[in-house]
Length: 243
Image (cartoon, rainbow, N blue to C red; front, top):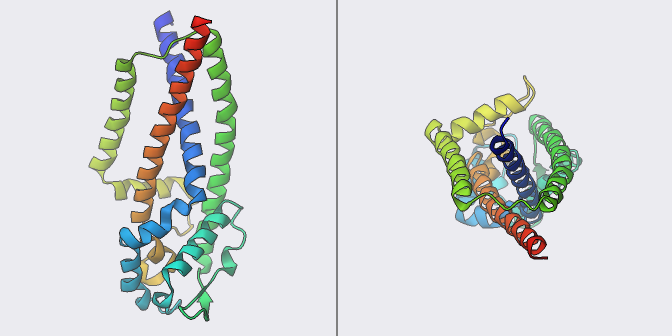
């Protein structure tokens, strides 16, 4: 392997690790604000979706009588649960606008699916925890070697590659890709698709629309964090070179 190829692979690995770290940090930040659910409820059609489909749910009735604050509370409880091995999912209950208890929120199949999500997040958490020290080690090694960042041209080529992958996903259909990922990721035989009329979980999230918004927020925030980390690296290297 030539030196230039070695350097390319070194930087490719570092940039990919930077992206993983940035995505992990972005997820933590967005999870703290419940992925902007209250805002999306009012401005991304989630509330209207509930008004349209909740009255058709015969097993979990009167969800349309809940307030936006109650729906935000329930979503917060779901977010908390999937980050803690799914504990408490089966105990979630919803109340009407007068505070009166109506029913449990989730069906057994929905609880099982969200527990699958919790198990997936646990695995991703392990990957993130492994990526962080690897990234830090490469950061310090590259600084010690006084390696400048790749040129702006090469960084833009990398961004163009990410854009090309995004274009392919959009060409295939974001919803189609979303469903295929579910087939690959979740255990065979476990239900992960739920009709709005039969699932308050899907209704209140307007799945998969909500996850599209979350993906965009993750991408934008991760890009900003990645640029910040690369700026930090460049600043440290320049200080070392001038020192």
